[in-house]
Length: 339
Ligand SMILES: O=P(O)(O)OC[C@H]1O[C@](O)(COP(=O)(O)O)[C@@H](O)[C@@H]1O
Ligand SMILES: [Mg+2]
Ligand SMILES: [Mg+2]
Image 1 (cartoon, rainbow, N blue to C red):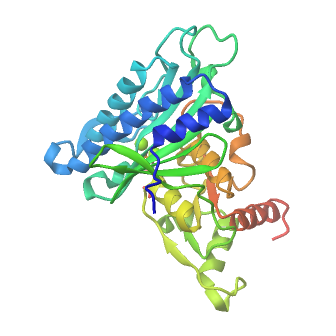
Image 2: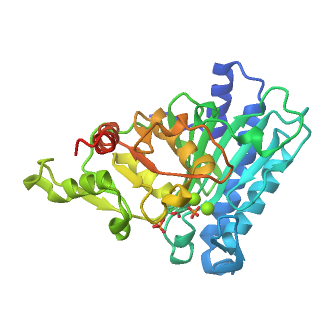
Image 3: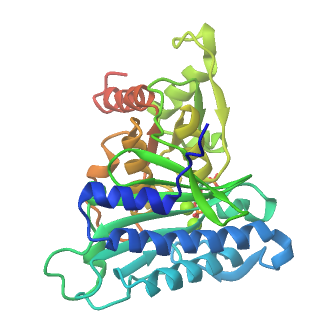
Protein backbone atom coordinates (compact mmCIF):
# COMPACT_ATOMS: atom_id res chain seq x y z
CA UNK A 1 0.00 0.00 0.00
CA UNK A 2 1.51 3.40 -1.03
CA UNK A 3 2.59 5.69 1.83
CA UNK A 4 -0.35 8.03 2.51
CA UNK A 5 0.36 9.92 5.75
CA UNK A 6 0.25 13.69 5.45
CA UNK A 7 1.85 16.24 7.73
CA UNK A 8 -0.04 18.87 9.73
CA UNK A 9 1.47 21.57 7.50
CA UNK A 10 0.16 19.83 4.35
CA UNK A 11 -3.22 19.46 6.05
CA UNK A 12 -3.28 23.20 6.87
CA UNK A 13 -2.32 24.14 3.31
CA UNK A 14 -5.18 21.99 1.99
CA UNK A 15 -7.51 23.65 4.53
CA UNK A 16 -6.29 27.08 3.36
CA UNK A 17 -6.95 26.23 -0.27
CA UNK A 18 -10.40 24.93 0.67
CA UNK A 19 -11.15 28.15 2.60
CA UNK A 20 -9.56 30.33 -0.14
CA UNK A 21 -7.35 31.82 2.58
CA UNK A 22 -4.34 34.12 2.30
CA UNK A 23 -1.96 31.78 4.06
CA UNK A 24 -1.84 33.88 7.25
CA UNK A 25 -3.73 31.13 9.08
CA UNK A 26 -1.12 28.55 8.10
CA UNK A 27 1.48 31.04 9.32
CA UNK A 28 -0.03 31.48 12.74
CA UNK A 29 -0.55 27.73 13.15
CA UNK A 30 3.11 27.15 12.26
CA UNK A 31 4.13 29.26 15.26
CA UNK A 32 1.83 27.26 17.55
CA UNK A 33 3.21 23.99 16.19
CA UNK A 34 6.80 25.09 16.93
CA UNK A 35 5.85 26.19 20.44
CA UNK A 36 4.16 22.86 21.22
CA UNK A 37 7.16 20.89 19.97
CA UNK A 38 9.45 22.92 22.24
CA UNK A 39 7.16 22.46 25.25
CA UNK A 40 6.92 18.73 24.45
CA UNK A 41 10.71 18.49 24.62
CA UNK A 42 10.85 20.32 27.97
CA UNK A 43 8.10 18.11 29.43
CA UNK A 44 9.61 14.90 28.06
CA UNK A 45 12.97 15.77 29.62
CA UNK A 46 11.29 15.54 33.03
CA UNK A 47 13.78 15.64 35.93
CA UNK A 48 16.71 15.67 33.49
CA UNK A 49 15.93 19.30 32.65
CA UNK A 50 15.80 20.42 36.28
CA UNK A 51 12.48 22.08 35.43
CA UNK A 52 10.24 20.06 37.70
CA UNK A 53 8.80 21.47 40.91
CA UNK A 54 7.37 24.77 42.07
CA UNK A 55 8.47 28.17 40.82
CA UNK A 56 7.73 29.80 44.19
CA UNK A 57 5.32 32.29 42.61
CA UNK A 58 1.52 32.55 42.23
CA UNK A 59 -0.52 33.35 39.12
CA UNK A 60 -3.50 35.70 38.84
CA UNK A 61 -5.77 32.82 39.92
CA UNK A 62 -3.91 32.62 43.24
CA UNK A 63 -2.53 29.20 42.21
CA UNK A 64 1.05 28.11 42.82
CA UNK A 65 2.95 28.18 39.56
CA UNK A 66 5.15 25.28 38.51
CA UNK A 67 8.50 26.03 36.84
CA UNK A 68 7.14 24.44 33.66
CA UNK A 69 4.00 26.63 33.79
CA UNK A 70 6.23 29.67 33.49
CA UNK A 71 8.67 28.17 30.96
CA UNK A 72 5.79 26.96 28.73
CA UNK A 73 4.20 30.40 28.93
CA UNK A 74 7.44 32.08 27.86
CA UNK A 75 7.94 29.61 24.99
CA UNK A 76 4.37 30.08 23.75
CA UNK A 77 4.59 33.89 24.01
CA UNK A 78 7.96 34.07 22.27
CA UNK A 79 7.26 31.65 19.43
CA UNK A 80 3.89 33.18 18.62
CA UNK A 81 5.20 36.74 18.73
CA UNK A 82 7.75 36.04 15.98
CA UNK A 83 5.29 35.26 13.18
CA UNK A 84 3.48 38.60 13.31
CA UNK A 85 -0.07 37.26 12.88
CA UNK A 86 -1.26 38.14 16.37
CA UNK A 87 -2.27 41.59 17.55
CA UNK A 88 -2.44 40.33 21.12
CA UNK A 89 -2.19 37.32 23.45
CA UNK A 90 -3.68 36.28 26.75
CA UNK A 91 -2.66 33.44 29.01
CA UNK A 92 -3.71 31.65 32.20
CA UNK A 93 -0.30 32.62 33.60
CA UNK A 94 -0.52 36.36 32.82
CA UNK A 95 -2.88 38.79 34.59
CA UNK A 96 -3.31 41.16 31.66
CA UNK A 97 -3.52 40.80 27.90
CA UNK A 98 -0.27 41.39 26.02
CA UNK A 99 -0.31 43.46 22.84
CA UNK A 100 2.13 41.97 20.32
CA UNK A 101 1.89 43.92 17.12
CA UNK A 102 0.09 47.07 16.04
CA UNK A 103 -3.48 46.44 15.04
CA UNK A 104 -2.49 47.05 11.43
CA UNK A 105 -0.29 43.96 11.19
CA UNK A 106 -1.91 41.50 13.58
CA UNK A 107 -5.38 40.27 12.55
CA UNK A 108 -5.77 37.63 15.22
CA UNK A 109 -5.91 37.20 19.00
CA UNK A 110 -4.45 34.15 20.77
CA UNK A 111 -5.62 32.84 24.15
CA UNK A 112 -3.90 29.89 25.78
CA UNK A 113 -3.34 27.69 28.80
CA UNK A 114 0.39 26.98 28.36
CA UNK A 115 0.39 23.91 30.58
CA UNK A 116 -2.84 22.22 31.53
CA UNK A 117 -2.87 19.62 34.29
CA UNK A 118 -0.08 21.32 36.25
CA UNK A 119 -0.67 19.17 39.34
CA UNK A 120 0.48 16.17 37.27
CA UNK A 121 3.78 17.57 35.94
CA UNK A 122 6.00 16.19 38.72
CA UNK A 123 4.37 12.76 38.68
CA UNK A 124 4.77 12.07 34.96
CA UNK A 125 1.05 12.01 34.07
CA UNK A 126 -0.14 13.51 30.77
CA UNK A 127 -0.33 17.30 30.60
CA UNK A 128 -1.04 19.59 27.68
CA UNK A 129 -1.37 23.03 26.11
CA UNK A 130 -4.77 24.49 25.10
CA UNK A 131 -5.24 27.34 22.60
CA UNK A 132 -8.07 29.42 21.13
CA UNK A 133 -7.83 31.81 18.16
CA UNK A 134 -10.13 34.79 17.59
CA UNK A 135 -10.20 37.59 15.03
CA UNK A 136 -9.29 41.08 16.17
CA UNK A 137 -12.63 42.94 16.15
CA UNK A 138 -13.11 45.38 13.25
CA UNK A 139 -11.95 48.85 14.11
CA UNK A 140 -10.12 47.80 17.27
CA UNK A 141 -7.36 50.39 17.64
CA UNK A 142 -5.92 49.31 20.97
CA UNK A 143 -5.29 45.75 22.15
CA UNK A 144 -7.16 45.64 25.45
CA UNK A 145 -9.06 42.95 27.40
CA UNK A 146 -12.35 44.00 25.77
CA UNK A 147 -11.14 42.85 22.35
CA UNK A 148 -10.71 39.30 23.71
CA UNK A 149 -14.12 39.05 25.39
CA UNK A 150 -15.86 37.33 22.47
CA UNK A 151 -18.29 34.41 22.75
CA UNK A 152 -16.87 30.95 22.06
CA UNK A 153 -18.89 30.75 18.84
CA UNK A 154 -16.57 33.44 17.45
CA UNK A 155 -13.47 31.20 17.62
CA UNK A 156 -11.93 30.59 14.20
CA UNK A 157 -9.78 27.73 15.48
CA UNK A 158 -9.04 25.86 18.69
CA UNK A 159 -6.84 22.99 19.70
CA UNK A 160 -4.64 21.34 22.23
CA UNK A 161 -1.37 19.50 22.42
CA UNK A 162 -1.17 16.51 24.76
CA UNK A 163 2.22 15.47 26.12
CA UNK A 164 1.62 11.85 27.01
CA UNK A 165 3.03 8.50 25.91
CA UNK A 166 3.15 10.22 22.53
CA UNK A 167 2.81 13.91 21.78
CA UNK A 168 -0.29 14.78 19.77
CA UNK A 169 -1.92 17.95 18.48
CA UNK A 170 -5.68 18.02 18.01
CA UNK A 171 -7.22 20.84 16.00
CA UNK A 172 -10.50 22.24 14.70
CA UNK A 173 -10.99 25.12 12.29
CA UNK A 174 -14.77 24.66 12.29
CA UNK A 175 -14.64 21.80 9.82
CA UNK A 176 -14.44 18.74 12.06
CA UNK A 177 -11.63 17.62 14.37
CA UNK A 178 -8.32 16.06 13.34
CA UNK A 179 -5.48 14.58 15.42
CA UNK A 180 -1.79 14.56 14.55
CA UNK A 181 0.98 12.55 16.22
CA UNK A 182 4.50 13.96 16.53
CA UNK A 183 7.00 11.69 14.78
CA UNK A 184 9.97 12.51 17.01
CA UNK A 185 12.40 11.00 14.47
CA UNK A 186 11.54 13.62 11.84
CA UNK A 187 10.05 16.28 14.14
CA UNK A 188 6.80 16.42 12.16
CA UNK A 189 3.16 16.10 13.25
CA UNK A 190 1.54 13.45 11.03
CA UNK A 191 -2.21 13.02 10.48
CA UNK A 192 -3.11 9.86 12.45
CA UNK A 193 -6.64 10.59 13.70
CA UNK A 194 -8.74 12.06 10.84
CA UNK A 195 -12.29 13.24 11.56
CA UNK A 196 -12.46 12.37 15.23
CA UNK A 197 -16.09 11.85 16.33
CA UNK A 198 -17.60 11.19 19.77
CA UNK A 199 -20.17 8.40 20.27
CA UNK A 200 -23.51 9.93 21.37
CA UNK A 201 -23.82 7.46 24.24
CA UNK A 202 -21.26 6.29 26.79
CA UNK A 203 -20.76 4.28 30.00
CA UNK A 204 -17.81 6.31 31.29
CA UNK A 205 -17.89 9.47 33.37
CA UNK A 206 -15.17 11.67 34.85
CA UNK A 207 -15.60 13.94 37.88
CA UNK A 208 -13.50 14.71 40.97
CA UNK A 209 -15.53 12.59 43.44
CA UNK A 210 -13.62 14.01 46.41
CA UNK A 211 -15.82 17.08 45.97
CA UNK A 212 -19.11 15.15 46.12
CA UNK A 213 -20.18 16.73 49.45
CA UNK A 214 -20.23 20.11 47.65
CA UNK A 215 -22.21 18.99 44.57
CA UNK A 216 -25.62 20.37 43.60
CA UNK A 217 -28.49 17.79 43.60
CA UNK A 218 -28.63 17.41 39.76
CA UNK A 219 -24.95 16.40 39.65
CA UNK A 220 -25.31 14.12 42.67
CA UNK A 221 -28.39 12.49 41.05
CA UNK A 222 -26.53 11.86 37.78
CA UNK A 223 -23.46 10.36 39.47
CA UNK A 224 -25.54 8.26 41.89
CA UNK A 225 -27.50 6.81 38.97
CA UNK A 226 -24.27 5.93 37.17
CA UNK A 227 -22.88 4.30 40.32
CA UNK A 228 -26.11 2.30 40.77
CA UNK A 229 -25.29 0.46 37.56
CA UNK A 230 -27.61 -2.26 36.18
CA UNK A 231 -29.70 -2.29 39.39
CA UNK A 232 -30.35 1.45 39.03
CA UNK A 233 -32.54 3.61 36.73
CA UNK A 234 -29.87 3.62 33.98
CA UNK A 235 -29.94 -0.20 33.77
CA UNK A 236 -26.27 -0.34 32.76
CA UNK A 237 -22.87 -0.21 34.50
CA UNK A 238 -20.64 2.86 34.25
CA UNK A 239 -16.88 3.16 34.68
CA UNK A 240 -15.19 6.19 36.19
CA UNK A 241 -11.98 8.06 35.35
CA UNK A 242 -10.26 11.17 36.78
CA UNK A 243 -6.83 12.13 35.44
CA UNK A 244 -6.88 15.73 36.78
CA UNK A 245 -5.64 16.98 33.39
CA UNK A 246 -8.54 18.40 31.36
CA UNK A 247 -6.58 17.81 28.14
CA UNK A 248 -6.23 14.09 28.92
CA UNK A 249 -9.94 13.76 29.83
CA UNK A 250 -11.05 15.48 26.61
CA UNK A 251 -8.62 13.44 24.52
CA UNK A 252 -9.97 10.19 26.01
CA UNK A 253 -13.52 11.33 25.25
CA UNK A 254 -12.59 12.20 21.64
CA UNK A 255 -11.07 8.74 21.26
CA UNK A 256 -13.78 6.58 22.89
CA UNK A 257 -16.60 8.77 24.25
CA UNK A 258 -17.47 9.68 27.80
CA UNK A 259 -18.61 12.66 29.84
CA UNK A 260 -16.36 15.07 31.79
CA UNK A 261 -17.74 17.24 34.57
CA UNK A 262 -16.22 20.03 36.60
CA UNK A 263 -19.43 21.58 37.92
CA UNK A 264 -19.80 24.66 40.04
CA UNK A 265 -20.33 23.44 43.61
CA UNK A 266 -20.91 24.87 47.06
CA UNK A 267 -17.17 25.35 47.55
CA UNK A 268 -16.22 26.99 44.22
CA UNK A 269 -19.60 28.61 43.38
CA UNK A 270 -18.43 32.08 44.45
CA UNK A 271 -15.64 31.89 41.86
CA UNK A 272 -18.04 30.60 39.20
CA UNK A 273 -16.47 27.13 39.11
CA UNK A 274 -12.92 25.85 38.58
CA UNK A 275 -12.10 25.88 34.85
CA UNK A 276 -11.52 29.10 32.88
CA UNK A 277 -13.93 30.04 30.08
CA UNK A 278 -11.56 31.77 27.63
CA UNK A 279 -8.65 29.31 27.40
CA UNK A 280 -10.03 26.04 28.76
CA UNK A 281 -13.84 25.74 28.41
CA UNK A 282 -14.35 27.60 25.08
CA UNK A 283 -11.60 25.88 23.04
CA UNK A 284 -12.56 22.44 24.40
CA UNK A 285 -16.27 23.10 23.82
CA UNK A 286 -15.55 24.07 20.18
CA UNK A 287 -13.57 20.85 19.65
CA UNK A 288 -16.17 18.66 21.39
CA UNK A 289 -19.07 20.13 19.39
CA UNK A 290 -17.13 19.79 16.13
CA UNK A 291 -16.67 16.09 16.97
CA UNK A 292 -20.43 15.62 17.44
CA UNK A 293 -20.52 16.00 21.23
CA UNK A 294 -22.03 18.68 23.45
CA UNK A 295 -20.61 21.18 25.99
CA UNK A 296 -22.78 22.80 28.66
CA UNK A 297 -22.62 24.57 32.01
CA UNK A 298 -25.60 22.41 32.99
CA UNK A 299 -27.76 25.44 32.41
CA UNK A 300 -26.66 26.59 28.93
CA UNK A 301 -24.32 26.05 25.97
CA UNK A 302 -20.74 27.05 26.86
CA UNK A 303 -20.04 28.58 23.42
CA UNK A 304 -22.97 31.02 23.88
CA UNK A 305 -21.68 32.51 27.16
CA UNK A 306 -20.98 36.25 26.77
CA UNK A 307 -17.57 36.65 28.51
CA UNK A 308 -17.23 39.39 31.12
CA UNK A 309 -13.67 38.82 32.42
CA UNK A 310 -10.49 37.38 30.93
CA UNK A 311 -9.96 34.82 33.69
CA UNK A 312 -13.61 34.04 34.53
CA UNK A 313 -14.46 30.51 35.56
CA UNK A 314 -17.50 28.48 34.47
CA UNK A 315 -19.07 25.07 35.19
CA UNK A 316 -18.07 22.52 32.54
CA UNK A 317 -20.02 19.43 31.47
CA UNK A 318 -18.93 18.05 28.10
CA UNK A 319 -18.69 14.91 26.01
CA UNK A 320 -21.14 12.36 24.58
CA UNK A 321 -24.22 14.30 23.49
CA UNK A 322 -26.95 12.19 25.13
CA UNK A 323 -25.25 12.24 28.55
CA UNK A 324 -24.69 16.01 28.48
CA UNK A 325 -28.33 16.50 27.43
CA UNK A 326 -29.45 14.24 30.29
CA UNK A 327 -27.38 16.17 32.89
CA UNK A 328 -28.72 19.51 31.58
CA UNK A 329 -32.22 18.01 31.82
CA UNK A 330 -31.61 17.11 35.49
CA UNK A 331 -30.59 20.75 36.14
CA UNK A 332 -33.74 22.03 34.40
CA UNK A 333 -35.98 19.70 36.44
CA UNK A 334 -34.23 20.76 39.65
CA UNK A 335 -34.43 24.48 38.83
CA UNK A 336 -38.14 24.06 38.02
CA UNK A 337 -38.63 22.39 41.39
CA UNK A 338 -39.90 19.21 39.75
CA UNK A 339 -37.44 17.00 41.69
O1 LIG B 1 -7.27 19.33 41.19
P1 LIG B 1 -8.56 18.90 40.60
O2 LIG B 1 -9.75 19.37 41.37
O3 LIG B 1 -8.59 17.46 40.32
O4 LIG B 1 -8.66 19.69 39.20
C1 LIG B 1 -8.10 19.21 38.03
C2 LIG B 1 -8.41 20.19 36.94
O5 LIG B 1 -7.62 21.36 37.14
C3 LIG B 1 -6.79 21.59 35.99
O6 LIG B 1 -5.53 21.05 36.26
C4 LIG B 1 -6.71 23.10 35.83
O7 LIG B 1 -5.84 23.46 34.82
P2 LIG B 1 -4.35 24.02 35.06
O8 LIG B 1 -3.51 22.89 35.46
O9 LIG B 1 -4.01 24.58 33.73
O10 LIG B 1 -4.43 25.09 36.11
C5 LIG B 1 -7.46 20.85 34.86
O11 LIG B 1 -6.60 20.42 33.85
C6 LIG B 1 -8.06 19.64 35.57
O12 LIG B 1 -9.19 19.13 34.91
MG1 LIG C 1 -5.74 24.26 32.60
MG1 LIG D 1 -2.42 25.71 33.11
